[in-house]
Length: 181
Image 1 (tube, rainbow, N blue to C red):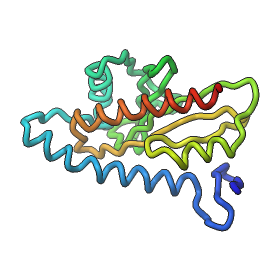
Image 2 (image 1 turned 90 degrees about the vertical axis):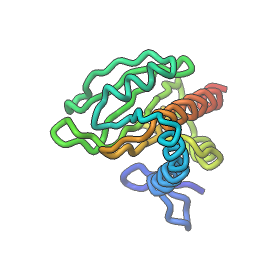
Image 3 (image 1 turned 30 degrees about the horizontal axis):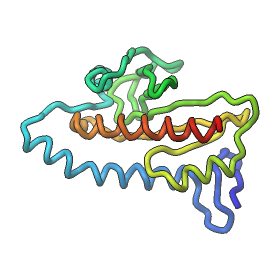
Image 4 (image 1 turned 180 degrees about the vertical axis):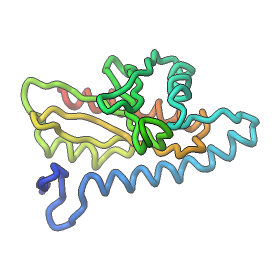
């Protein structure tokens, strides 16, 4: 049975795992799984890299994959990319920045406005069954789906980032279907 702590993390009673801890484990697993693709991309001669420290590379990767993407800034002055996937607005939020530059990670983020709050058990159940995307609820009970990607300052190959985009879009479409059924 899930419960929430003060920070709003959903915790499985008796297990002590917060969604944040589960998400970090999933992000590390995704990064580890990406390493062979990175080596293959370099072996194939595709040296293009996507890095949060150069937000324009995120925009170019999204555009290369067929998405419209607009680079702007968030309320704190950090880079922000606006796009859409499967008909839903998606933000690519930049994290681990120094003075609004030299960011080291991004988070894909989409929120769904519902007339009634989504039951927390549905959000937790969806997250437990899916690898690509984590789910949370805002203060009004509206669900959001996010996925963090660590690029570091060196970046990750375009092919890996394009796979991230594709998998996140699938997760958005799948989650939206569940949210509005």
